[in-house]
Image 1 (cartoon, one colour):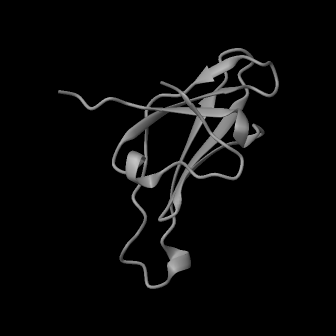
Image 2: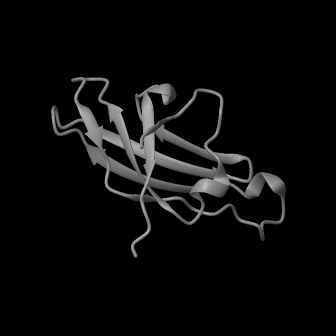
Length: 103
């Protein structure tokens, strides 16, 4: 089931930490719906020396199949939650889906 990201609300860390997610979004250039490969959700750094150093990031790039525009994707994990950012795409236009664990 796809969950649409909300503008000012982080996705719950406890549901996503240690899991993989797929993202979908609409390309802002050609309006093609783009689906990513599975992305890992990093754990915040509990060993950091300061609270503002606990954030962890994973960054990937994906090419739109409709117009070949390169989108940069960032998965930001904090103790407050997880944020998905796609370059040139509004955050409320991004949806995510948690991959089911393999049996």
